[in-house]
Length: 270
Ligand SMILES: [Zn+2]
Image 1 (cartoon, rainbow, N blue to C red):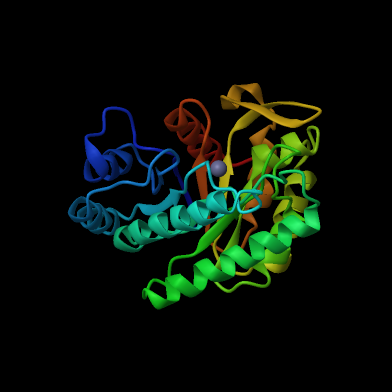
Image 2 (cartoon, rainbow, N blue to C red):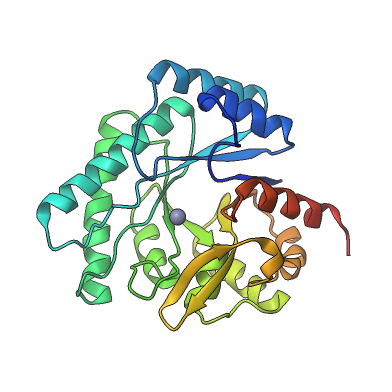
C-alpha cells in the first residue's frame, strides 16, 4: 500500500484531532505531525487524535525538532538532543505514530566517521531509554539530509540503522537530489535510491518528497512540484514495484498541494 499525506496540519486545523479529520477528508492516508520547533501536545488530545487516526486509517508519524545535533561540540546540546528525541517519542507513543523523524547532526567540524560514532552512541542510549519506558515499538527515523554539512548520507544512515534496533532510514528524495547535484533524473535513478534503501532495510518505507533548489553546498529551499527538480513522474514506475508499504510525506510548499499532486500521479497509469 502507498500512503500519501502532508507534513504538518492542514490549514485551518484546530488542534491534532481536527487535523487528522481534515487530512482524511482531503483524501490523505498519512500525516506527519511537526514537533520541529517545539515538542508539545496535550496528552488527552494526543490520545484522541491517535484514536481518530486509526478509525480513519490515517498513518501518523512525527518530525522531531530541527535543533537536534548529536555531534555538537557542546555536551549540553547533545544532552538536549537526547531529550528532544525522547519527548517526541513519548508523544508518538501516545499518538500511535511512527517513525519519529530526526535530523541527527551536522558534522560540526568533525569527520564523518567520528560523527557517525557519536550518532550511533546517542541513538543506542535513546533506544535503551525508550525500551525502559515501554515504548520500544516507536521507531526512530534517520532522514537523508540535503546539505553537504549535514550528517546523513544514505551510507552513514545504513551504518547506524543496521546496528541499532528500532532505527530506520527515512528516504528524502529532494535531499538526495540536492546533495547529489541533481542526481535523480531518470526512473532508474529513483530505482537505484529505492534499491539502496531496501538493500539494508526490510519493512515499511517512510519517505519525504518535495522539489528543491540547490547549490554546490546542496539543499537551498523547497519548491512546489511544478519545478520538476526532481521530476516525480519518474518515480511512479519504480515506486509501484516496491513490495513493502510506502508512506510519502509531502514537504512541498504548500504540503497539501504537493500531496494532492502526488496522489494524482499515482492514480494515472502510464
Ligand atoms: Zn526533515
